Amino acid sequence: MNNKEELIFCPLGGSGEIGGNMNLYAYGKADNQKWIIVDMGVSFADESIPGIDLIMPDAGFIIDKKNDLLGIVLTHAHEDHIGAVAHIWPELKCKIYATPFTAALILEKFKEKKIDISSFLEVVPLNGKIKLGDFEIDFVTLTHSILEPNGLSIKTPLGKILHTGDWKIDPNPLIGSQIDEKKLKSIGDSGVSVMICDSTNIFSPGRAGSESDVRDSLLRIMTPKTNRILVTSFASNVARMESIFYCAKKTGRNISLVGRSMQRIYKAAKKCGYLKGIIEPLEPRDAKKVPKNKIIYLATGSQGEPMGAMNRIINGVHPEVHLEKDDCVIFSSKIIPGNEKKLYYLQNLIVKNNMEMISEENAFVHVSGHPNREDLKDMYKWVKPKCVIPVHGEHRHMAEHVSFAKEMQVPKTLLIENGDIIKILPGDKPQIIDKAPSGKIYLDGNINVDTDSPSIKERKNLSINGYLEITLIVSNNGNVKKPVISYKGIPEKEEEDRFIFEIEDEILNICKTFSMDNKKQQQNLIETIKQNCRKIVREKTGKKPFTNINIFRI
Image 1 (cartoon, rainbow, N blue to C red):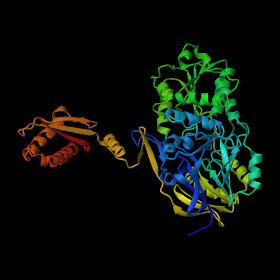
Image 2 (image 1 turned 180 degrees about the vertical axis):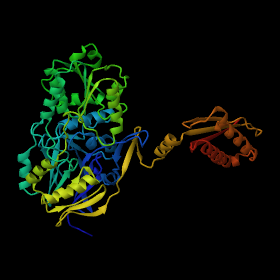
Image 3 (image 1 turned 135 degrees about the horizontal axis):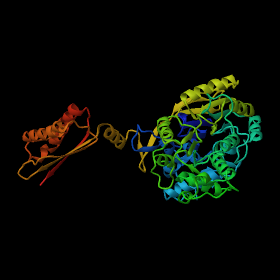
Image 4 (image 1 turned 45 degrees about the horizontal axis):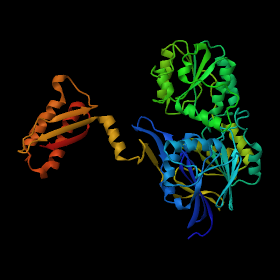
């Protein structure tokens, strides 16, 4: 047995995909390793999984080791980094470490689930340090599209890792500090064995750009407008939110926040001392009374989410916000891959209703929160890592990041995926030594289920093939009444050719071949009816409905 101390890294989410970030680190001898979790995020389901909104990493591997878990360390408050905490933490019940803004949002998430997390939540000051067992963790202030993004300098007796989290280089982020170049250079000078780094924008040349430039552009766009302005953006981008407040003040307009998450982020930012000196927002119901050239709405739903405020506003069903011809709608956000269909539908509806539609496709209204290639070059020069392990990307992003690291003369690189157990130190080079069970868990309603859960399979079947229910009423002497047949989601032909008539005849014929007062034959009867009726529906309609048979004896 290997009896040397080792530093281990294992991603359970976010490596080979964008979203659902969850990373594990372990230190110690093979039979006595202590673990930390860095981030615990969600990704969002599409229409291929009906009834599911949130997808989480399967945390079973670390849940099994919860007695050796030192805590959860959160880099920043985006949903793809903290969205799973409230769902997975009840199985871990460990300490959570976060800077003030992230901590405020975590408290809110647990409050919604009626869990008092206060005795487990440790608030870390900006640029603060914590010690968890053999891990000395130094929070490094970076810039990103949310308040208080942190890289983590993780020092162990064997060496140091820089876990970048999400970042970019923004020379003028508007809210919060600039990226701490001095601290990053100092960390680099002290020697970084491995940098575990964001790969999201590896294909994008140049620099990600600054929030300050977006503010100037938005003001230029809004100044000449004479009707209502509706802006949609990611609620978590507080700098963008402040820019809309700034534009409202400069153009002599009131502002109204629309959507629960926009209100929640606004309150959390105010509570943490941000958004000082801005105008007071109006409630949407009060904003209705304001002249149309004196109001800006800032709404959630920038990805066309079916229940988002934008969708309801543009479809004319929002109770308090109404738009009309010549109003201006600005999408101050990017299209997240996979959301194109929903968003283009919404944008086409805006144009069809004779409103002005502005997005990143026709104006400068958004900058990314992730590093482009020139930003990455700067980080590499400051940190001077001996090895780079790309994360936070699909396989194509991470493979390109490995090539980029080689171009930058980084001595060693390693391409990984979720579930890989990597020995980082000791050794000449990090290497994959084992595989941890990994996968996804769906939040189905408020219950965590496996991806092959019967509820998911049944719902997919229902959504594709529809539902058929047959109820037989059998009297004591074995006589069968006319079956009661109901169905949903199955297409029909003309009235005289409905499959329901054939099903009725088939059921009565089957019943003649069974002794109806023999209860032992009931299960065989049910199966025979189910198979024969499904066959009729398939031949008539091409559908194989989810079928349920009930037998009542009276």
